[in-house]
Figure 1 (spheres, one colour):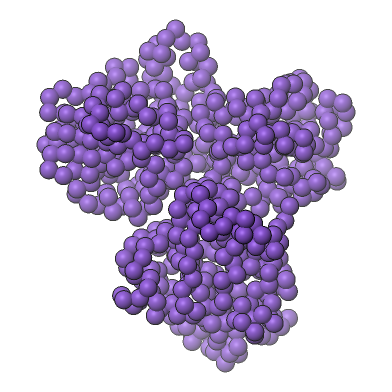
Figure 2 (figure 1 turned 45 degrees about the horizontal axis):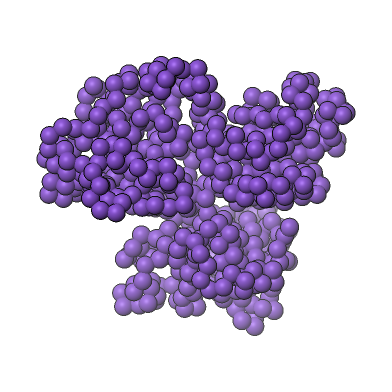
Amino acid sequence: MKSTYKDYLELARQIGETPRGTPLSLAVFRSCTLEPIEPVVRVELVSEGFAPTIRFFGYNIFEQELLDPAGEYGKGAYDVVLLFATLQEFFPELIYDFHNITPLELEKKTQEVVHRMEQLVAAARRTSQPRIILTTFDHPGRWYYGILDAQRDYSQKEALVHLNRSIAAAASRHKEVYMLDVQDIASRIGKKRFYDWNMYYHSSLPFSSEGLVEIGKEIARVMFAAYGKTKKCIVLDLDNTLWGGVVGEEGPDRVIVGPTGPGRAYYDFQLQLKHLSSKGIVLAMASKNNPEDVKEAFLKRKDDMPLALEDFVITKIGWGLKPQSIQEIAQELDIGLDSMVFLDDSPVERELMRERVPEVYTPELPEGAGEYAAFLQELHVFEKNIYSQEDLKKVRIYQDQGKRASLKQESASLEDFWRTLDMRLTIFVNEKMQIPRLAQMTQKTNQFNLTTKKYSEADITRRMEDPKWQVFSWSVQDKFGDNGVVGLLIVKIQDKKASIDMFLQSCRVIGRTIEQAVISKVALYLQEQGVTLITGEYIPTAKNAVVKDLYPHLGFTKQAENVYALNIEGALPFLPPWFQTIHMTPQQAV
């Protein structure tokens, strides 16, 4: 259901000023009145577990506020800074004086605006390292030369495209700088609905209530991506969701799906799902059907469907309850229920899922299948701030996970299972090529995470470049395939003591003693640098209870409540013998 601005105002009132959740501070600098987006952004952030604090700085005084060492901005630290600029105030010549500017003068002015943006980014990071959101520019009216603009050698539209591309290119040169595509928002809802010129001339607010809603939602969407609020798995119903009709009643030949005619809606929906799968979102199936009917439908209608049965990592086809099926899927994939999305056309099934497994994100599907594809595109839960190599091969990784689960069931003992896996562990020290992946893991890993800190790429880069810090990461391969980079351990070394600042590992490799091998090899590495004591802290959360006894299990001794220490002057922690190889860069293989 689409929410209006009045809906957001009411929801914000119900939330109140002090919502529960992860604290998140947002500083807003703008060249126009923008305060009315606050309830939209607040409601959206609270819906994803944040407790936001939003502060608007002075109207159209970017430089004065950001560059003044004694200004209010410098007195605080913010997690995110939004620099929201409009073309009217930031580059009015492109709108009002385009016919008098030569291409050379326009290029010069474009570079001045880009340089100004970069100066603002640098100023926003003068005292801290916030994530920063920049805006693209939208032309609020018609082109100066009207219908002839597209036929000119140097058109106004091309000039605007060049400006926006130049700003985006500059943003890409900085870590943790994101773009808010205002031009795209305006084009999606239409400029007549996006702007409100009566409000602009009355209070310098150029946007309609509908425009404010879309801007606020898009700001939140960028922030969700920046903080790794990405779902990992879509669990799908089949009948009247993936195709039209009930395959068990109508037969595979008569279900509605295909590249033309009424089946096009389901075909395009499957195309969107295929697209998400190619970006690392895992597809699974929970359907009340006979397995033979489903297999026959995918076989007979393979030319009419972008998706094949093999695109689904796990299929649960039968007559059991879908909440039970989705719990089994989560267990087999070793992911949290809060990483999953459930899509089903049945209101009854959706309500049952929300009641039985509220952690699963269960949105309302549109009533008509013609809106399914567009609905899927609008879901913010699949946005990512980066795409790592692990993301691009995620489907294969989880398919391999199923093979490991089968081997584990067949093995006589855990040690037999570990030996049969033929694991090969590689530990890296300060590997800068992995920084995007490591930052991504800090945002996403919640279960095997002893401190649950969240680090940006800039945070990890600074630690790699500081000699007092050491950043260890590791990847694991086995007989079924490459798991990719799955763990991160950050320590700070002072005198002869190494304090663990972060210790996390992907849930998909839990239960293979990898953390034991890592601690053993890292302890040896630190011992050779003169370290005699390693300390670590466990900070309990609602999700990381699985590692509450990890430090004692690894040989650490309890020093205080949730604080542990490992003396490495003499003996080192146990090194599991079932790894085929353990390689530590820059050390040699063992």
